[in-house]
Length: 253
Image (cartoon, one colour):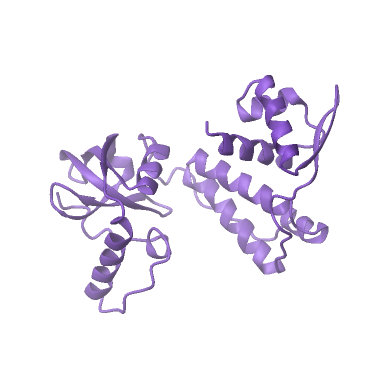
């Protein structure tokens, strides 16, 4: 694990766990040895984090200078917590944990009144269980390939149960209550394709870099879809505009 990621996980654990938290608990939570934990605590303290600790008692984060003071309106807090809570319905433990860690970091910087509001929000998310097909491939690997703009090799079973193997450039992921879709540029067809991630039977890094073409490919895709619908192209400010994509080509090979 990279040093910066390790230190961030330790800070997240100090914010999230009831204080004081023992060194053994912190080491288990961050998956490092006690010896490494003591070194990381010293590193955080040297960087300005105020971490109190006593032998046999544990550690407590008494001040967090990593983030500046923040302030949100009541409805902004509700919207934030609603969005984070919706991650639990995506059946992606890594994404859910990332959301919880992020919101713990945010709450730690809020004034007491707003922190209490975040802990007792009115809005909640809900959906029926068992509606999303189970994903068998490594989602961490797929997300990393998108971020690093690296091609992947997939074995795919389409909606007619035909199996194909191909190299694709992964461009973005789209979550919905029913399915998780991968938008990619297929190297076999030299065209955009949408794949049901639950129907990808095998996935491996192919290692071909397509940086810096991802952003332009996404803009072109969104413009084409808007033209087909007779609309003005939207401003693309994320992996997929508004987190959605059309499944118009999922049946094509």
